Length: 259
Image 1: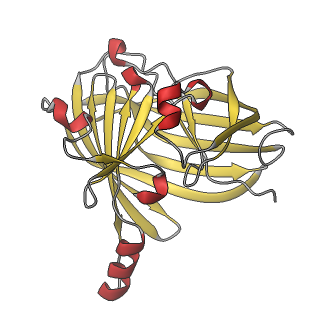
Image 2: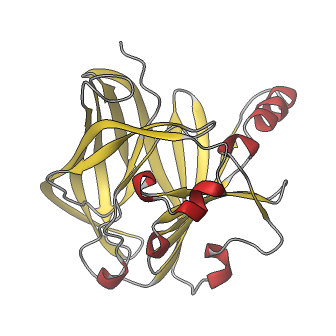
């Protein structure tokens, strides 16, 4: 199987109106490991805080926690960038949606991030509605199948390959239509720079927000992993704008590896 560093395709294209702010906590289980993620959303901005759930020996859990420090991610759609925060080190790292259009000033600030744009990646998203409905957290949830596909060209960084994520579960609409983020982006390896493809968007459909379901990941049509998602809490309280900004006193990291 061709080498394929994990690529996460994020689509933020909600369709139906719901409410402006929300905070939601979810548990994701994958290959015997657990992960708890809390998502804060306000307008077109989003904040994700993730921590590993380690069962068993406390010493082993402590070692694993040290190896995988908690990093907070903020999506700033209005600025077309994502921000990673390490609160322990008071560092932040900015990851633009489009590395092909960095300004000269941005390039000067990023000496360790030598990114090469090579080849293309064609992305698509298709939704199939089963017609099933039920009430969840005071909202009407739809049972949908969401298929996201990413195909790299032969002249891309790692050659021709394809990745597909098939998600089935209960989806709801969580954000207002005017707060949708129309800019999809591919997050790739940036620990010491890296190579990224030019994106081609094709056939985009959005299912909404997954409350509970199963995600299967395929690489070159071979099943690689299966994970499950469960929502444990949901709040609609108004959120502080400061949650979605770079904290004062933090220093910009030259590379993601510093975090």
